[in-house]
Image (tube, rainbow, N blue to C red; front, side, top):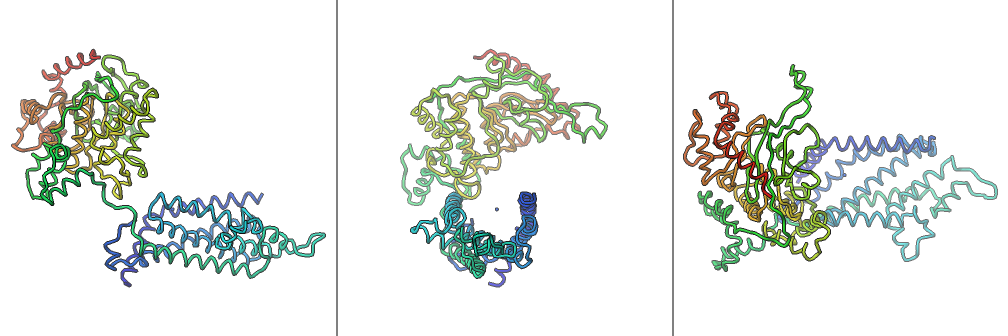
Length: 621
């Protein structure tokens, strides 16, 4: 037990060191606030059932360090505040009363910290804690004797006055000040000193003992709140599970696997693909390729939805993007005034075609996508961008396009349906009625396979609610409910394992099958994920395209193109084509072989065919 306590003390010290900036910032903030206040008168969840039930982790070994280790910080804050404001504001100059106020504010700080720790331990949920904490503040403020004097508090509320920590703090502070020498004066018509009259006017007892009553009460509250906090952590279980939400269909499959029950084809068809990979893993099978390939590509074609949209192509010609030359590079003797990130990129993305935008780090994948999506607000953009033959206007384009960022940022305290409903209310035209909007949201949830999670809370990443893969699909759905014709996705499979990435890719394929134009930047995909794309837009470092065209079955078109280039090594059997193409087109290989893959591409038949295709896409309406 001693070692456990020591470990928790060391843990708390380590956390405080790591968060030292926060504490320093808070102390600085308090210093500034104290100076401002003075001049007026101068003219900041652990799921632990398994360990608590077994008696391994005693709650007090956690709560005691979390209280005591922060006590010096409380002393520092009170020292800053009282040291700056006491004489600056003009409180009674008696040194004894200075230290008495210091003691009271320290106890008050400790009591309030203990109160909110207790509320957090009792509520066990962020939303509930915030609500309960705000309610307690309201009650204590109303019944603490400051807003309402004791005589003005209704009899049926007077109990709140006597249990409020603020009442004892205010009484003690008032007695400490107004019974001082500065207030020991009489005014004409009154026999009592001025300080006594002020205290009585606010219902405060004009007796020195009330200072010690207040200090003792605050000390009692400090102990009480921290003891109750320990009790809550010992006996109360968290509301939420720290596991991601599992869909109803997946649970049915798991139950069927245990019981040997045979599910109906309709039910099995919706979930068999999402469970193949997991069952192969459990069985120790190495045929992951087959299972994931089925997961990605076995989605039925989905055409026609409640809300119609116009399929649009986006064509770009000779796109150049540059920024002002960084000072660090200028210091190295570079004379140019601009740094060019994209060097004359041309291509097109068409409806119903899933395009992978790939390249090594620094190739400009995200830069190109941001330029096309209109998300670049700085720098210099040159070239032509057309939408189905019409010049691109960002105001109009924003209404027909969507952008799924790599970071899945969602409100944790709403459900999946509420997230989509909110997005649709903001982004769909005003003439779409409520019933149509709801039907469209349901269709989108079915499209990305979120219907079983309709009422699930989004939760916090890695803590509760949806898993990472489910959050990715929610991000896609949030954009889909705006009914865009063109969707850009920035690394939708980033951070996912093979099975989760396959599920996300299936949702993306379903989106493409509606006739939308979908472009994804992707990094180090597996073979099955890579071959689920229809076309590839490959860039090299420096912002130049080196392959724009179809992948073909088993990436045959891509492999045929690069293997036809002299001095490019052949791909090995079973090797990942995406890894191979990045290796053979790297800057190191270009230097070794003397091949400029950008020039090779622009002199190829593939480039000429792509240019013809781009011209055709420009006139597609």
